Image (cartoon, rainbow, N blue to C red; front, side, top):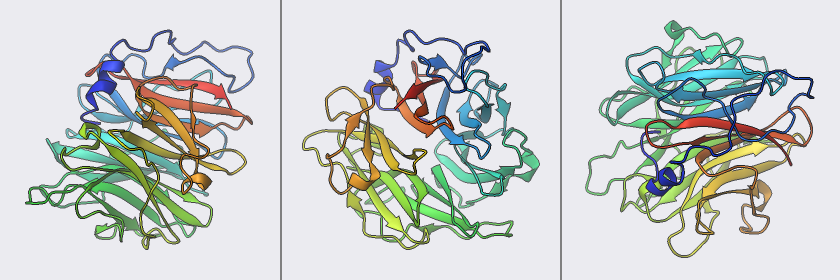
Length: 359
């Protein structure tokens, strides 16, 4: 992501103390717990925006953006056992900057990927591609999802309905400049068997007329979609620059008609809540993961999704994930073992780190 909360970057300037390069193959069980390790090896420049999934065959995929090739592009790697990772595959080759991938796999095994592409500073659109194996991507098959000029469409999050419809939610500053500018959430839909995406519309009923709505994360949680995002005071344009921000959520049966937004976090004072994620354990239970200054120092917290209306009941700090930002968790196929991925490092040379840990 282009900019980060200043104190988060300062907290990360020492790199990842004690982190190791990926381990060599061994006789360990698959997805054995590890310490923190470097994933974006061989990249002296910026690596950010991880997206993590467990594929249907149990292998784990991580997508992110990297400047390693002299241009911001999307890369993907895979591990089948937690010990060996495939060489990062370059997914995009455009001269524009490609950032913030969101990756998923459907029930038929097809991989779907969305991201945003900058053609000029603060001007860009959402793009889409698909792959049969998650590691082979043809740039000639890329499809432009949004096409408005002179807008900044970015940080997309992808979900899929039971009938195969794809829905991508993203932030746009389409009201900039204006006398009352806000960042709002938008959605575009790709119907089954369609090669194109429907026209962009605002996410119905969720955007605040006076505050910024940003950093969306969506998942199909059982019989509904759940959308979680950050709402913040528009004294600053970006949420990680704002002095205060909160997590908000809404649900929908179809991804288009949403309940009224409900605020989750409720601290008084200048507390920042950022970079939310929804993840599911092997038993089917959903949790919210995010970064917060509710205890002063930026710390990763978790909350059962079922407790979202009873905050802070059930909240715990995730001590297995160190400082940094954009933390993501996915359950491995080994019961009780999760993969955690995050960004850490000084501005301009951030890296992607990971660890396997027991919960």
